[in-house]
Length: 165
Figure 1 (cartoon, rainbow, N blue to C red):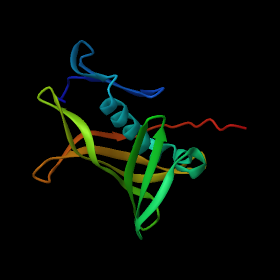
Figure 2: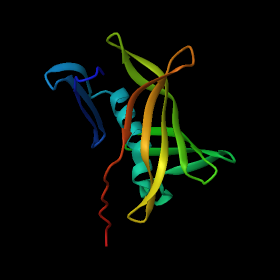
Figure 3: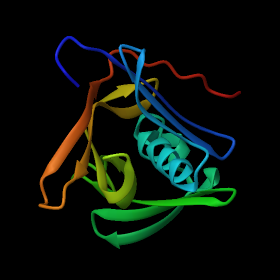
Figure 4: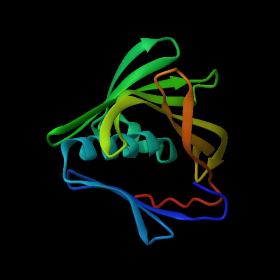
């Protein structure tokens, strides 16, 4: 948010409920969304987009339905109980996820909810534990004028997977 000032964020989708709590320095609440269909949908969307870091979650055997859009993109749908989300995945020349996009995801603006296009970008792919994953990513809102408002950027330093036997 501001250089040198930490914001602590608890983002979760648990048993059909979306939870988002953000606090400045862990003390001053900036956002607290939970218990609404919009919160559940938004957090399931975030979980689904983050599957770029655990790609086996994107397999049809995990309940994901895929539909081709064109030669380099596809729409994926995930349903959990009453909550269903669809994201458009665009793939690069190597077949790796370049972007994930939703046409409408709820975001808080001036204390109210506004639905806006939302997207994640991924790059710096490397092989980790036998899976090729992005080590860098960014998430942004698309504003009404078409510009992007990034609100999270990160780089994976370490990842460890546990595989079922």
